[in-house]
Amino acid sequence: MPETTTPPLSSLIQDQVNEITEIRRDLHAHPEILFTEERTSRVVQEELGKLGIVHKTHMGGREPNTGFGVVAHIPATVDNPGDCIGLRADMDALPIPEESDIEHKSTVPGKMHACGHDGHTSILIGVARVLMQLEHRPNPVTLVFQPAEEGGGGGDKMCRDGALDGDEANGFGPPIARMYGLHGWPDFPLGTVATKKGPLLAATDTFDITIKGVQGHAAYPHLCVDPVVASSHIITMAQSIVSRTTRPTDSVVVTFGSVHAGSAYNVIPETCTLKGTVRTLDMDTRATTKTRFFEIVEQGARAMGCEASIQWNDGYPVTKNDDAEAERIAQVAEEAELANDFQWVPEPGMGGEDFSYYALRVPSCFYLIGLSEPGRDPYPGLHTPGFDFNDKAIPIGMEMMCRLALS
Image (cartoon, rainbow, N blue to C red):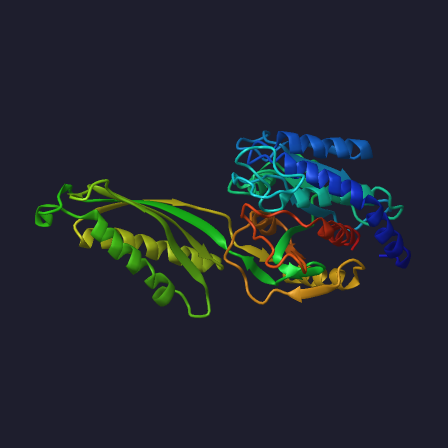
């Protein structure tokens, strides 16, 4: 990057912060959950249109060529450009009622931006504004505004619809060669940029189990087959996957989040249903865990005289950062003027992210920008009714994305 780029870049970012903040607060006030992001998409398209940036939508839906995802392309300004850089923002909100007294509080009952996607989308709009003002852009840049990160696999569907593939598929320009995404993070102080080489977030599989026994009177258990007792043994035995099947240096979470059976004090029910999630950080461990889980549930039920049926739902893959791109994040963060600290994340988290689908396709890195600050301690957590993206993090996110686009 030419040395003359950095000072004007910082100035250009600061010139845009107030307007981008207003866009962010407008998006916060009008949240849209997965696969319904029509207004948000329209705001993105209008902003891109003002800048003269070519873009297309109807991407990332449940079916091909549907949905409200937007892909936009900013060409390089040089004759021999470098790699095409992909920058991603997610747009959807969550079905959570907001509990706050902020002026830009959600106007949609039961829905709010509890994960900061309003901030991510606004940052990427700001990046588009800044990049279009630069005379020197060494790399073509593709902006990916995706729907349905919160459980809908929008990243996977954007890949399916050709967002990374350039002119050869359904996008623009050359195929994306490397990809970056960010997330506002309440656990880090404002001004901090953080990431990790290798696995950063977990694979997020879920399951639905029905244990079937024989119903009867609670006073005569010997005439019944009790699915509740069988389920209790299965729940306990499944934890042996963590303690006895998994390497001590690896990580697995097996959580039963719902157990439901019966409706009376004196009836042994016919069925008991179990729901939960399995989190893993390694693809081989993921496969081994699934195999062992089925063995324990099916054979455990059989040992108690019951039958088990299992519906396994493949979730997001492991979010695994490319080592070289993680190093690039560290270098760019150290050069940034608006960020004041870079940290290597010491260990992966067991949450999930569908940025993982991009990372399966091209060298990628997902990184975190801090949100907390004195006076707001503890900062409201992600997916809680009091969360609001910290607007002071907007210029930091913009600078990181702009510098990555120019790197």
